[in-house]
Image (tube, one colour):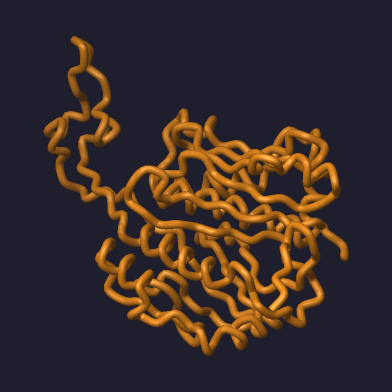
Length: 299
């Protein structure tokens, strides 16, 4: 089998990511030819990677075929076929939830004493109400993407789709530092399209999608909005992306500038993506960016 590299050649599309703003969700679209090609090698529930993730995060179930819902705990909900693609909805979950009970940190006052100053309670944000963090659905989404993107890293076949693959992603899932890391590849036509965005200061669709996803999961503090950024900073198609965290975001890999100068695609990687919230936020941004590119790129 000859393996083609997306950064070097145009390859017919085998999957896509799309963004749904109303009732926020990432839409995973998988080409029917790719699904048919991997049926004999679908990932079983007793596969080591599945068993490890299931045990680590206490998932209840895993489905490794595409006939119904896919992934851990039904994270990818199959909604049917559209054209040559089977579509799965990945709903953005609420991680931070308000219980309605009194906050135990401030006893319901909404205030805390800090260095002889009274300020809003850090835990309840001054509401006086208790909040909890339900990480399980976010980890299930991350782990399901990790399984799928591992399987879809090299398709093994060329689908019958006339439109080329624009973006691929690879994710990992862990509970330690860098546990939400992700990377991937931008194709030749995608990078060529990115060059047209140079000088526009921002990619608003990407920023908006990231804000919506992050707000859905964790809520937006007034200063959080300044941590969302997506821009093409060089005329060669150099895309930088940021979201809340310690310098958290996506950037071209070392040496990518050389590929850009030769008119090729390039790989991207992440920095300090520690949680599934950050990972899903960045995936939402990439999905929205892909939607715009899909409309504007003419092949």
